[in-house]
Length: 373
Image (cartoon, rainbow, N blue to C red):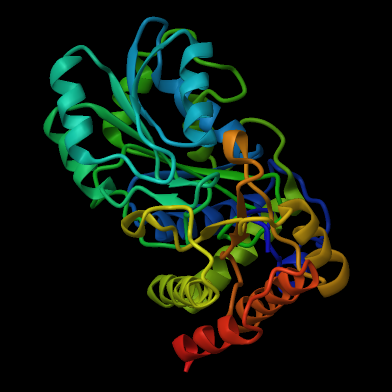
């Protein structure tokens, strides 16, 4: 129950046993077309959508490097570890991040973005983490942020690594120019692949970017896409896995998938309220895919997690960065269901009791079950 990598269905694992094929041959062309068409469904876009052999961090770097020239100003709200990394990517590329500091646990607002654009009239892009994995925060103002960037003709880059396919994210409707995701989160795939959508406005910016990266040059990716290929050797077994995962998403339907994630998240939050354990994030920004809660006072969080894993066979994560010891993080993503949700709540209740932190055993489970039934 980590916030990635997540549990992978047997059907997807079995898909990786297919034979290795020529990545320049007709079998791969068919596989590639299946993936890209279903990626457009997941991104809810009519624009380009590509799979790339890299990690989530790699695809964020790809996105930044393709739209940022040295000296370019990029507006970036910072409200957790992954938005800090986004800022660092811009800096290392030679860009000038215009930081919007936001309290950890809260999410950036569209009016902050708009105010900063008016002040920094030569800013070339806005880069936003939609779901901050380190704090369990979702930037619910993203649709309005997209309206602001569209109105000001500025490229909007969105890191959706830990939320794509777990909550609604219609990139065309929300005016998102570049959106990136990772295979090992809500797509329920093994780690090692990333996905990206690119708008026409983004292409205009990319084509004007000097010294684009080589491996991550999206213009090369676009050229190969026209041949139903990748510019460099892909991780073929993972492509089989992604193809199967996307087919499963199609079968379930996006709306049903979003509803399932939201219901499980609601059950988690109801359980922790019943146990008097406080969520870390503010109520209006709480994520449906990464549940972040405060470690109860007097509890050793690392010890609690170790007991959960070793004694109750449930693994959750601690915090990151400056809140490393302060919170628990639970992945509510991928194939998460009532079973995984209730098992996790029960394991945490038991682990806390084992550490002599008295919670009302069964209270969390009772509250969660009311959500499901």
